[in-house]
Length: 457
Image 1 (tube, helix red, strand yellow):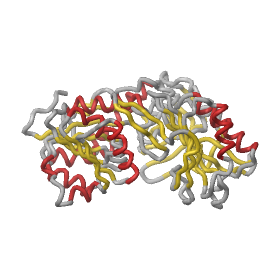
Image 2 (cartoon, rainbow, N blue to C red):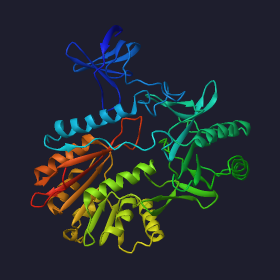
Image 3 (cartoon, rainbow, N blue to C red):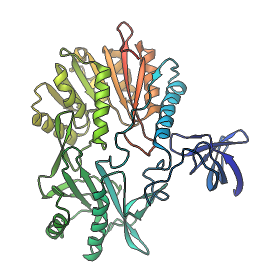
Image 4 (cartoon, one colour):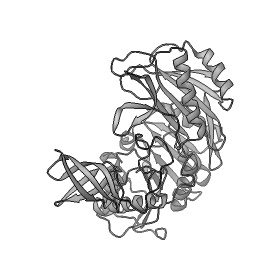
């Protein structure tokens, strides 16, 4: 189909695409902002919607701004960088409200204004940069092109992390070229270097370099450490991870520390956390503190409370909450995450925490676990939300309070519908923006039993 038309953009969809309407059908566009009139080409026509590519912007929105990054037009990382930040927050709040009302069927919940990020650039503490064999350039090192997962462009700058990230990427690209080191080919599964991963703690400035390669020793390790640390003295540790899996993910199966301690240390709410190359950690450290502070204010913990923290990861919430309650038990499926959680508990001298390595649904159905002891359950599930069996069992346990932290408004609203139907109240939700210039939004919600007083909205 090659129909060219004019369209008035009315909204942005959950996936960041612009939304217009034509002949009673929704049209999803690859660009454009609410309030703009565009000339577009219809590229796909389905029964309930069309897809289109913007050719020209005929009328610009007052909310449009000039993106700061030279890669904005091709990069898939921050598709809202051309939209004024205050408007981004407004749209994200509307997405949360829409999900709660449309999916959850809950029309009496107060959704507060989004807590914006104190830093809208330079906020990310971790970035993964991919290598890709290129027929003309030899190879590229950078980020994925927008909506083209298999195509990587050569990155020269990125404004989401600190400026040093872009400098390290450019230096490493030239190092690989100069030393004729082979790059991994995702089609043929040959070659060596796959990813460059950089992590920097915001509150301590520790800086980690993680080189992810195919199976095999890092023959250039000694030379790399000497040159890289000389060029960038800010680096505190360098590690090498081997990953021979065909799935193209920057996770190592075998790790060797090449320089430093093999971890960086970050601080959140006065607690210290060691972060290793393959550890999960919130990628916006400063905003993570605000997220947890907001959650704990809604929770109103008591020194007598016994808490169950589901999907606890490396234990950040568990450990930050520990000084405020009697005991906390964290449950997480990933064994490495539990190992790190215990390490961090020891680092912070937390004597009242316990970590259990188990699938959450298996933990909840195990008759040997005394679940009635828990006054509070915290759930911070993946984007898919809580497994149906987890949700059902949680409702059966009926703790006094359920604190739900979500990174997906749609699955949160789905789960909230069932929790409220079981007899809990949901007076308010608080969105928190962890990722400026993207469509992502976190939501914090407190569910209270009906026979208890709920925090004021």
